[in-house]
Image (cartoon, rainbow, N blue to C red; front, side):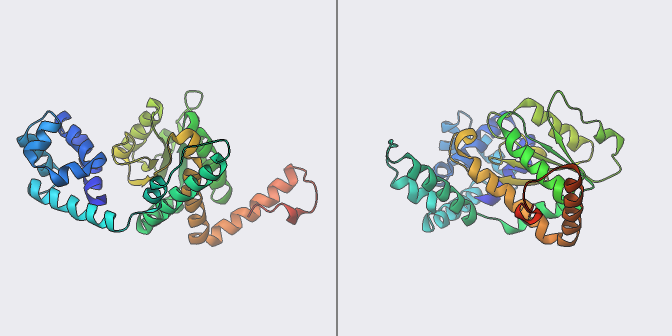
Length: 293
């Protein structure tokens, strides 16, 4: 399914309104395509058989049969290795005052295990390399996404430097215009409901030549269309109150990846960070009692 989703992500902006409806079925309910004809999918989406076939062609498939076969194979493989989330949901009990703590932690573990099972090392390496290469980084995450965005900004600024946090209307993005000769990377964190300002910043940055690393729920997210690198996060719902452990785990992978693959520069940066902070701030106890890393 990942190949189908990636094709949809890349072509989504070029699809017609009717084809976008079909793409939602392909992403959210692929089993319908696996068992139904193109004519039936047209009926289910209030489009037509011809529109379904044109949708397949738009994604680069020779026809509906090729798309259907690829989805069938993907679903068969997924069924053979049902992950921890399916196992957890199969035994999920009603939340009670006595069980909620146990259930919350089990849910977090299940989604973290699912993320590890679906982990794409090559994609994450590309994202980490883009962070290391960038001369300037802008992190954006508005509304509740501001919390993980601020943590990512603070940590990247400590281990790499030249990282900015875009905070919305009270901020500005003039640095895009004044230093466009350098390699910029925008890291955007956004989940439903997606703030229009996050989408606008991503689109504007892309038009000015910046690279975009999108951290979001999937290929149909409005920020994924402009992404050079897309990291999908599957979390409990609602994300704002239940999905933070999974999201922070992903962000921590990026940070640790930069620390491992750019170790020499990171160590120099952290040493400098410690020297400056020890002069600016007073700490209680021995210096080694509160190491940054």
